[in-house]
Length: 66
Image (cartoon, rainbow, N blue to C red; front, side):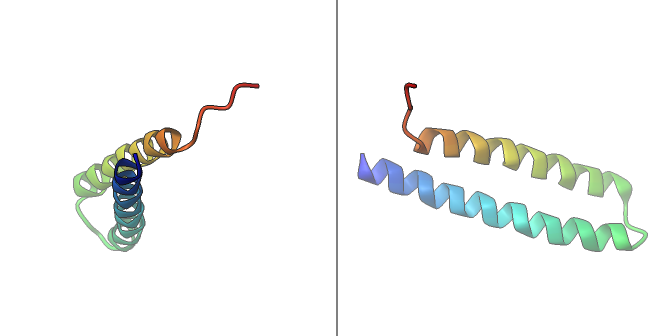
C-alpha cells in the first residue's frame, strides 16, 4: 500500500511540475507572435493535466463518510 501511495505521490509531483512548466511556456508564447495552434495545444495539455492531478489527489485522500 505504501509503495502504491509513494508511486502516486511521485506521479502527482511530476504532473504538477509539468503543469507549472506549461504555464511558463504558454505565457512566453502568448507574449510573442507564436503559432496560436501550438498555444492552444499546450493549453489543452494543461487542462488534461489539471484533470489528472485532481483525479490522483482524490485517490490519495481517504473516503470520509459524514
